[in-house]
Image (cartoon, rainbow over all chains, first blue to last red; front, side):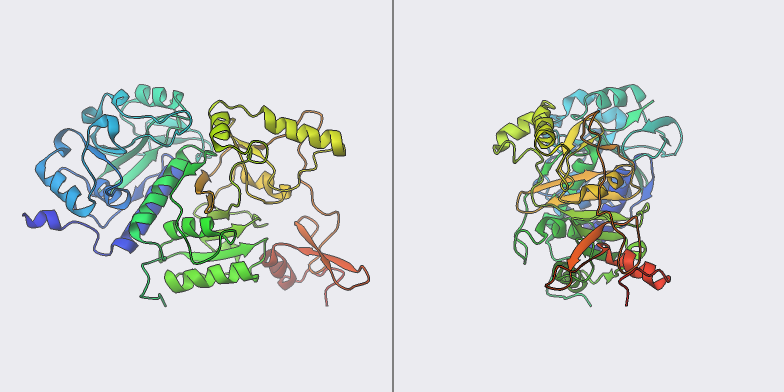
Length: 187
Length: 285
C-alpha cells in the first residue's frame, strides 16, 4: 500500500473537521462568500478544499460519485481509507466530486422528492479559479446581491427552478471554497 | 479544561457528520424540517437535547458560547448546558450577547441585534407547526410537499372568531421565503419580526422529534395573518421595573402573596447592561 493513501487526512480530526465544517456552513449559509479550509492534503487531482469537504462530511453512510479524472486508484484508495465512503454511480450518490464538465449532465443526480427534498446530491465542483465576480446571486443568505464565478448560469437556473427540490453545489479551488444552494437565484 | 474522557464536544465524529449534513440541507431548503438520527444525550428530552446536538456539531475550540433559557443566563437549563460544553468542548463561555459567537437559546431571541458571524441555535420541542391540527406525520409531510397550509389559517381564524383577535402568543407560525410554514419554536410572537432578515445564522434542533431546520441570514420570514387582522408583535404594556426599558420583552413576576407584581426584562444580559449604563426602573433598589 502506498504511503500517500494513509497520509493527507486531518491530523486532529475532531478539531479540524469542526473548523472545516464552519467554513462549509458559512459558505452554504451565505452563497457567494469564499472561505478557506485547510488541514487536508489529498492525492492529485483532488484539491485540498475538496479533500477537506469529503473528510468532514463523508463516511460509510454516504455513497460518493467520483467523476472523470477524480475516479482513479489513488483517490479511491484515499477515500476508502480516510472516510470508508462507498463509490457509486451518479443515480445513487449523496456526494459527487469532479470538474463541471466531468459531472455533467446534472439530470443524472437525485434531486430529492417533494416529501423529502433533502435526499438530493451535493456536488463538489472542482474549478480552476474562484472569484467574487461574474454571475449575480440573490436569495436566502444574501443581503442584497452577491457575485460568484460559476461555470454555467443556465444549468444553475434550471436547478433553482426545481426548488424546493434540486442539487446543492460546493465549488472548490485549491484550499478555497464557495457554495451555491438550490435556493439561490443566479443571473 | 476539556475533559479528556470525551471526544471534542461530546458527540462522536460519525454523529457530528450526520448532523452537519442535515444542517447543510436545512440551510439549502430554508424552513424545511430535515430528519436526523437524534442521539440520546446526558439530559432528558425537553431540556434541549436537539439544541445541544446542533451546538456540538457547529462548535469549534475558538468559539465563545452563550446559553439562555427564556432570555436568562442564570437558570438551571442554561447553567448546566454552559458547563456541559465548558467541560466537553473546552470553549469559552459568556453571558454577553455581543461577545458570543454561538448562542443556544430556549424560547427567546436576544434583544440586542445579532451580527454576521454569530450563530443562534434554538431548542425546539415540537418542530411541526401543523402537528396539533393533524397528528399524522405522513399527512403533515404531504401537506408541506403540496403547500397545503389552509388548515393553519383556519386555526388562526378560529382564534379570531373565539377571542376577537389572533390569540396565539407564542410559537406563532411563519412562512419562509413564501414556501414552507415553520414553527419558530415557542418564542413569544414579540420576537417573530427578528426572525427575518437577521444577520446571524439560525439553526433549530428538535431532539425528541429528530428534526433539524434552519434559516440562513437575510431570509424572508413572514408571520401568518389576515388583511383585516394583521400580525402584531405584542408585549406587556409596561416598562421594566429594574432598568426602565420600554421596548424589551417583559416577564411578569409575582413578588408577594398580596397580588404585588413587577415586570422585568426577560433578557437578563440586556437588562444588566442597561442598569450598568445607569438606567433605573421604578422598582430598582
